[in-house]
Image 1 (tube, rainbow, N blue to C red):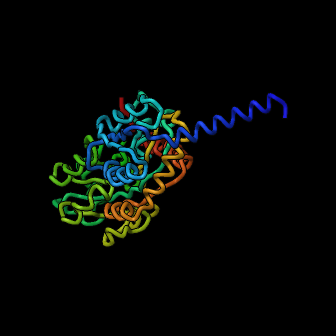
Image 2 (tube, rainbow, N blue to C red; image 1 turned 90 degrees about the horizontal axis):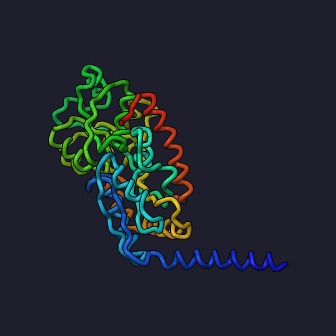
Image 3 (cartoon, rainbow, N blue to C red; image 1 turned 45 degrees about the vertical axis):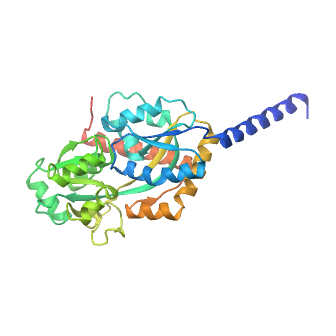
Length: 322
C-alpha cells in the first residue's frame, strides 16, 4: 500500500468513527417534533403514542408541537427550513406530504427534495362515516343519495391536500359522485363538525372516529381497507360495493434533507424498538392503527410512488389551488 492509499484509508476510518460518535452522542438536547395539524388527528394520535417511548429509549425529550395551518404546509415549511441536525422532525402521512405539491402552485419546499424519510410509524386505514341524521345505512345507499343530490352532501376534511381530503376525492372518483368539500384546520376540528352535524360525511382515519362510532355519534358505512378491521368487525369494506377499492397510508417521521445518515439510522433503529413494544402495540391497536416500521429507503420509495399516484388523481379531477 502506498502513502496515498494509506492516507485515504486513515481518512475513511476517521469519517466512519466520526459518524458513529455523532450518532451515539445524539440526541444531546431536546428534539422538537412538529405535527402540522391540530390535536386529534391521526398524525397527532400516533405521535403521542410513540414519541414517549422514543424519549424513554433515547434518554432525551422528544417534544411534540402542533403547528397547524394551510393543509399542513406551515408546520412542514418550518421543518424544511430548519437545520438538518436531527433536532427538528416532522410527523406526516406520506399521502398528505406529497399531495400539496400537486395542489399549490407555489410551495416553499419540495417534499421529495427537502426531506429524508426516518421511518413509518403506523398504517392508517380510513372509514366512510355519516352523521346519524343522514338516512343512508350502507355504501350503496350513500352513493345513490349522492347521485340524486350532486354537490349537496358536505364532506368535511382536515385541510386541502390532507389524507382525509384525498380520501374524499378518491371516493368521489370511484363512486361517480360529487360532494362539496369543506376544509378544516385538522382532523380534530373536522370530526367535531361531523359530530355536530355541520357536515354530513367524512372519509377519515378510523383512529379519529372510532370513539364516536362506538358511541353512535356518527355512523360507519364502510372501511377503506381491503378486508374488515378487527376493531369494527360489523362494518363492511367499501370494496364490497366498489370492487378493488383500497386506500391506506403511513403516518411517518421525516427529517430535513441533509440530516446525517448516522442520525437517521439511529432514529430508525429506535423506532423499530418502540413499535415492537407491547404497550405501544396495544395503544395503536385501540386506535385501529397498525404498527409500521420500514427502512428509510422504503419510506422514500413509498413517497415517490404516492407522489405519482396522487398527482394523476388530482390532475384527472382538475384539483388545483393558487
